[in-house]
Length: 226
Image 1: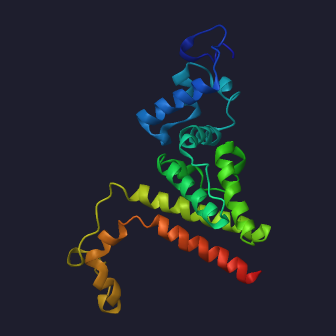
Image 2: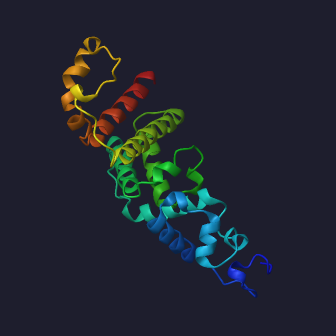
């Protein structure tokens, strides 16, 4: 670190910084300001180091956030999975869902392909369980990867919808603007009949039963095509 890089006008040797210290400081920023405010510059300032020093420990902001996800979510991952391959797929997906749901900003980071290489071993073991379960159910390697990707998209999407819906005002009853002013409700008889119950029905937690139906459909289709 040069004198111009030293934070707060300090000179001399930079402080020794460990991965644990970096993640602890990142968690403080997350808890205080939210994950959107967690930047390399802000983290370096929190630690009293230069950004150059910080990049000896992390590749970029996304790498930092994935490391945080590993630290926060991994302790709650269920790794004692059933031997039955179908049940193993469902249990692994449920474990991923429940752990990520406890870190509500995590799906925002894990919404692009290519993140698997940055996950820790416990999370990768669950991915392995889904792929191996699909293979043991008769899927080809290509189908097994497609099963994982489809289950992953459903899982992350469900969490994102829940997180983004939390705290938003509920939909208005039909007579007070549930439908737009230009909508001809006579052409939407089923939606009109359900409108008053829509909020109640949409709030139900259907992840588990929908996941089972989804997995059965994916595995069944793979078996038929095989």
